[in-house]
Length: 462
Image 1 (cartoon, rainbow, N blue to C red):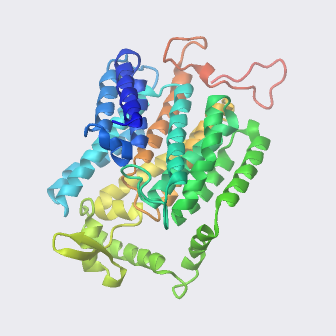
Image 2: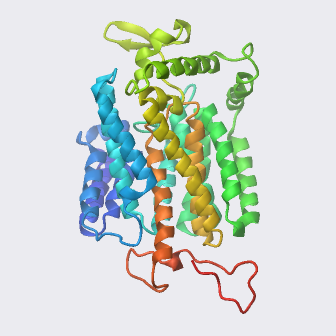
């Protein structure tokens, strides 16, 4: 066993032990570390036991979390809107096993979404204070910095592939995932100090460089939308610093972006300039969406996971197909490239409704938290902005690639629910000076006096 593998194994065992004997949060962070390090994808992992590293870490964190006393000052995890929607969507996926066109892969997807319910519970249960939210976000940024470093040191030809683990090893998915960390890291650099700021600052060049190397047009458009969300939701106390850091970030990105990247991004314009100028990739996606609408009308209850791929030969001309290998040789198939259309075709109209409900809740919750939190601390406001911008990245990028199963969105949904729960808990807390461990009071969301207050007026209270 090499030194790297040995260090990973010792850290893994230590993290699980600390989850049992110190605090369940160690189990959650061990899970995040495994998500990014993912031993089966690294050269040093070949010398380690072939066990389910993520599953074991999640199970240990789950057992340890159940030992914690219940939180009575904020809504139960299963009563939050995103948890209800996620549970309903997962139950519907299990029901669809009765008629799924690709039974094996649909069963695997059902298990995956069940895992996301567990992750939602773990994050909501264990990330209970603004400080804990900050360190979860720092862990996400640090993990993406590691992926960025792998991209920086990779020997590649063409686009950056195979750097991430399951679900993010493809160029588009990797770029989208890294872009969520860029949004969050921007806010951490803006308002945090010491470790949180320096980790985020050091991570930014590597993450941006990997995004450029991935060359994802969808991720590029998503970053532009995410930047707009950051601008609209930024802390009002850091406006000048925001513009200064944004300018530096733009200069850094323009420095890293090469001619090949801009040549690929230029096809975004030709894709909307008319059918005679459209490249094959953009044209095939429009053809696919039209075909998916026909599939949805003929299968209103959904085809099951990967149903688009199964039905594609019946609805799409062969010239738009991608060759895939099966037992009898190469066959033309086409998988979905739009997350909403994936939900519509593969989970049917019930799944599409739940999809719209989830993202509608995200938009409303971000606006609500921003509105009621105008006088909160800049750190909390920045967390709202960063998580909101990261969710915008996932949603916009999902209009060009199928990200229905991407794990980072489950993290972000639960973190947004955590912020909503903290706001509720802060309003419900009976004492401003309550300092019990794990308890969030109104002091965690410090407010300032309203703009119209005088020197004799008391600060507004939540």
